Amino acid sequence: MSSIINILPENLANKIAAGEVVQRPESVVKELLENSIDAGATSVSVTVKTAGKTFIQIIDDGKGMSEEDAVKAFYRHATSKISTYEDLENIRTLGFRGEALASIAVVAQVELKTRREVDQAGTSIRLDGGEIKEQTKIAHQRGTSITVKNLFYNTPARRNFLKSNNTEFKHIYDTVQRLALSKPEIALEFTSDEDTILALPSQKLEDRLKSLFGERQFATLIPVREETELLTVHGYIGKPDFARKSKVDQFIFLNNRFIISRSINHAVFSGYEHLVEKGNFPFFLLYIELDPHKVDVNVHPSKMEVKFADEQSAYRVVSAIVRKALGGNDLVPTVEFRQPTSDFSSLQHAAIPRFYPDAFPKQSSPVTRPDATVPTEDLPFDLSLKLDQIFSRPQSPSGESLPQEQQFQHVPRDEEAKEGKAIWQLHNKYILTQIRSGLMIIDQHVAHERILYEKALERMNNAVPSSQQLLFPQTIQLASGDFTLAKDLLPFLLTIGFETKVFGKNTIVLEGVPPEVKAGTETTILQDILDEFKNNQLRVKLDARDNVAKSFSCKAAIKAGEKLSDVEMRSLIDQLFGTSMPYVCPHGRPVLIKLSLQELDRRFFRT
Ligand code: ADP
Ligand code: MG
Image (tube, rainbow, N blue to C red):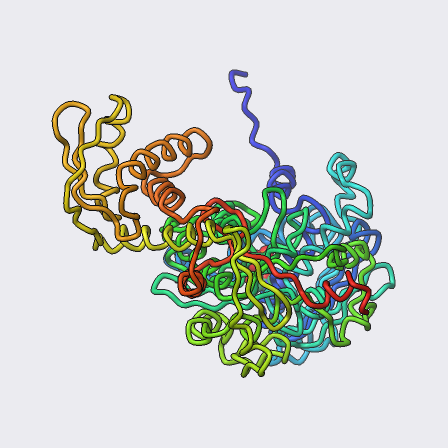
């Protein structure tokens, strides 16, 4: 015998291959539910026992199978969903690999019952370890019912790898929840060991979210909807203050398929800019629609990983959408001396794996929310026009009517709000102004920083520098390191308005500066920008452009200690609310905070 290579018997080969598709009971639930969705079901029930280890049953009212197809469905690579390579490039179904039923059947005892609308009799097939043991005609309602018993009964090693019932159940719950979110219009029942876990009617997305997460969490979400040439995105993102310590509530669906994408996740985070601290995770639920040709879903047997043809563009669009939605909401932190208990979400998750959607009836009563969610009427005086522009953008998704508390339309301001014209400067550092709900405190330096930062970026993007010619060009002598850096940065500096010429060794001549730069400070500011640039370079990895914009905004901004006139303060506030993100400076510090009357009342024991 000169050969040591064996061709594995088909049954063994199948068992090995099954390992890729069927890793745990959750995989079975996922594959079967996906099949029901692909079959056009309008109602599906999922029943598991002992966390799916002994029993999984999925019943749907989808299109069913003919007797011939019911048998074929268990062959490896048997699928009705694609037939040519071109189809693979244009997948609109959840399944397409034709592996699931074959894989499940070899490692369990399976019973399939199915009938199509056009057939008189239905078909029943019983398989054991992948072999058909019985095939009969039966009476059956339209649709398919698949029962999977004793998973891994013939692969003990794999069975031993299963985790505790709690853990396995949690996996199943997550998968059922994802599919419930991907198709709110499908009625879904989920039962575990005789307990009803979910009983969801056919719903609108909004209602499904309320059913799954509770009204209170829903109230912390901001709707988003955006269409670009490349893709459309809709869904919800969480307000930053409600971010949590774990990633559980983050969902991305690509053409209705739940996916895991580090890149899109990252894009969402970058959209939150500095609004969410490291280690905290905002809620998000985004449905991305994209031409199937522009994405490859056949990267992994689980079909959860995808490859975008143009990942960078997808990244940019998603990040911009999140940013815009956040910028359009009043995210002003409210000063509270006593922290409110806002972490109701922990409540909900403590309830898993025994979460009943009806178990939180109190959540449907009107919810008291922090002031941060009632934007327009709450902002000072003559900003209404600007604010209308800011706040109206993301809040009108699809024309769906949102519940009262979700609507952010402009509310006419009453007398009290008009009195908000009062404005003070505190210690030449903070601007105080009355708003309807109390007092708003703005850090003048950071506010100006935000304004200048966005101006700088805008000039850079549009390449229309705005510069004031200096009457007397100024010669600046630089250390040779700084001189090299300055030479590298000159193009960027020029785009924001610094007109310079290199003049011999280590010397540059400043001929024009951005209009925001105060007379007399021109050379110091340029030197400061170079220093700040170097500082930033050491601390954080910024691209040069962003770094220049940040350094400029930091150094050219009015400082703490500068006296401002009434007009200057008003103009500052006005410009601040014209930026895309008035709530944080480019470095992530808060620009403004609110102190509510309520809180003051509490402090003075007026309540
Ligand atoms: P895939 O979903 O990748 O096509 P599967 O092994 O999951 O592969 O299913 C094989 C085939 O069996 C499907 O293509 C479909 O034609 C049929 N099928 C499976 N489940 C159902 C169902 N619930 N209703 C109708 N047809 C089904
Ligand atoms: Mg399938």
